[in-house]
Length: 92
Image (tube, rainbow, N blue to C red; front, side):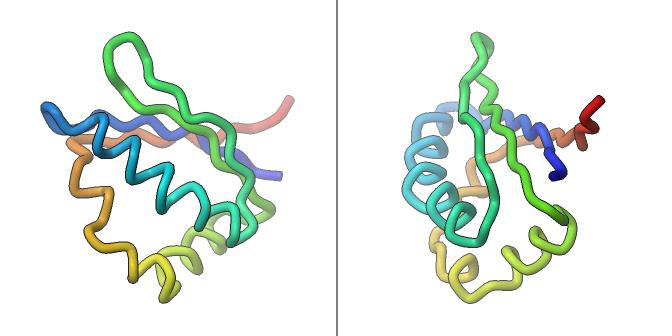
């Protein structure tokens, strides 16, 4: 299993809208496409954080973003994101 820690900073005033849209669209679609999702959390300084896991994250992500279901998410919740950081995690 591969895991990524993803942390986003929302645009000013957009965190609540992003969180709502993420719960409504992104989370159920990620799970339907076979991802494991832990979180999300919001840090005390207002960053959105979650963990996403899969057997082959690169291939699964490519298929997810190429899917008709993801293309149908309109408007795209990512419009609320100012910056994003991603870390691939390795179990030890």
